[in-house]
Amino acid sequence: MDPVTMDLATMDLVTMDLTTMELVTMDLTTTDLVTMVLTTMELVTIDLATMDRVAMDLATMDQVTMIDLTTMDLVTMDLASMDLVTIDLASMDLETMNLATMDQVTMDLTTMDLVTMNLASMDLVTMNLTTMDLVIMNLTTMDQVTMDLTTMDLVTMNLTTMDLVTMDLATMDLVTIDLTTMDLVTIDLATMDLVTMD
Image (cartoon, rainbow, N blue to C red; front, top):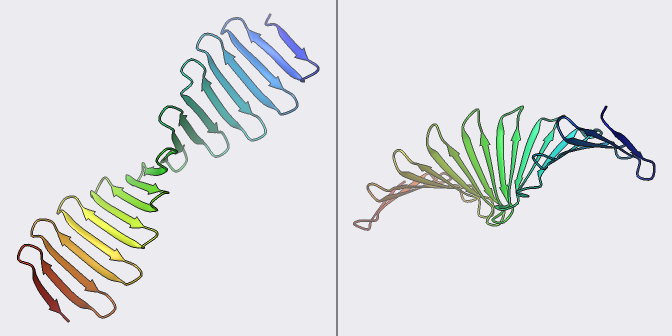
């Protein structure tokens, strides 16, 4: 015998489950289904129109979780660190947006690619955790930098001038290839020797 209350002014239908101590509110106007668990102080809202599920922990007030039951997106907002995390349960993509630093990080859990987009500096960083390749793309200057963390080779590709620059951090050789004229320029930063090959 759970008590049910209907508020005719707000059109709220309120049900209290005395076993689980859940307070359930159904707004017949907006079709929002709100559940308040009085023991854990968790507030859960389900929009039956958009099928969005939002959970708020009123005790810590630091995390809001939304599950879009249509697209199966799992979104977590940490109010302390201002991290916005999205997990697409269909494609298994994990995306983090830090609203303070404006860093957007995407983790493909299938290919193990870690992609960081900084919206302030317009740097697009890709880290492949399998091959350990680190790729940085600056969308303003159109510079693409690849760092092989195994061989420690640093490769820069400018997509505007089509210059390909390789920096070997072991031998300190700086190699430039102009893909238009196919000129090969090597600079030994230790001896400061300049070698040009056409």
